[in-house]
Length: 442
Image (cartoon, rainbow, N blue to C red; front, side, top):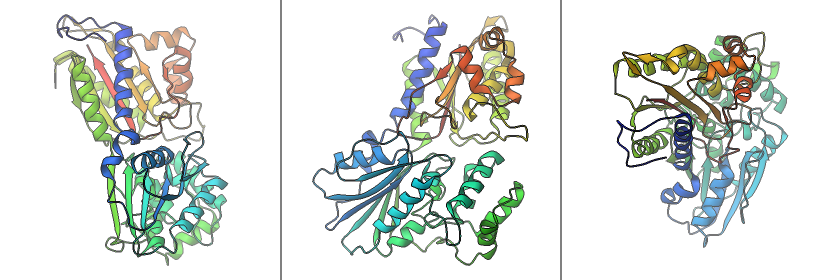
């Protein structure tokens, strides 16, 4: 990317626009790299033992970062991360498990964490390393339930269109480790949690279903959500939710739990905005906690982008609109092809913009490129983080024999962007501050 060029004379071609959007994505990931940010948030070193427990897509690299930051502390413990997300550690055990639907290793990992925090003394410290994905990766069924019960309801929740907050409310009330139960198992010993937020609003009780913090939700809330989304739980899960005799720890009940946020979507967005300014662009952060249906979000963002292109409002081009959060994709009875929430958002955005992607407005030619990707490197269950759309995305898709609207209806956006060569493939980034969206208007 060229620097020192005035905004008025800078030439934006496809190669420059693509490189800029990829640089913005990389900046978001770098701002949430545990190896860069974890050490600054560590508590004082314990005089007794330090037991490390963790869950999430970043759990292993967080453990490695801890070992680097505290080379003189004897550490022990276990963290559970997603398959393919392990990194070498010297003292802390790493278990890999399945995401987004838990498997046997998810249960084994959760049981191991609960065992690790038992029988500690007053000088010992439990250090919990929590990040997105922990809900599936650590799945200890509550008494009376099996892993199959949890897998069934997890699949139903994923396809229902429920938000991450709603899904985790249900998960907590079917779990032996979520909703503060891990910290309760360690009580009265001190628990310090270092967390990377991947949820809208950065609510500690929602990140990985809040295993170390009090839970404000109830069994009644979980039952209402099951009914709202038309989910039929297994008989055992239904009985568990109906009994409601084993509530999660509520606010005020975990006094020895200390929660520290080390990376959030807004922290990454602010770093992305600085990166955009360094490339001669005016950035505008629209929010870090945007939710809703991915396809509807694409239409909304298209309207904002067109306003910038046509009216220089709320800021004049060259500009970049930025946003974080986590949209959802509700799968109908007809099922779906291959796709994730970011590629679905982008395809909807491209269709809504139509000719405005590379059209002329008010006598001045404006072109629009956009990127959306999950900062963990995996959009849903696919092998891409997201994709990029360009002024000729729709034309290239049709040349490849694809009908963009039919693809969107069939939730098959990955297939379209794979055909056009516009997928962003990073592999696991080993962090996760949710989705990053950037719309470039020049």
